[in-house]
Image 1 (cartoon, rainbow, N blue to C red):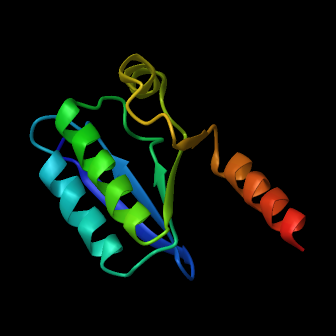
Image 2: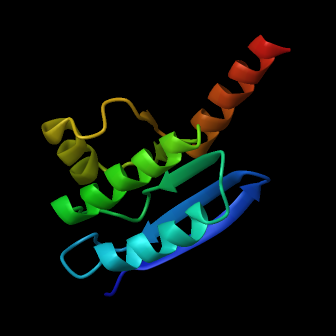
Length: 121
């Protein structure tokens, strides 16, 4: 099954990127194109919802690292939710994204963001 990548504006400045399928040799280009479209809108936060990804290769990791670098230039962030065990294992083995926040679910992310905003108020 070819990779499908859904993107959605969750609220102003916050985008969700949700790949569906394996991030294998044929799919990093598809992911990169969708991410570039999101980056062109100057987001404050990009949420990668990995619920339907059960495989990731080094080229896809490279796309994610490049995304992180681009977001950092503009003071924006990226987080991951719903990492599946095989993908989480790759992240753990490579320690590829140590400075990123990884959340078990969208609800956990929302709770975290609510708590952070409450501290500012």
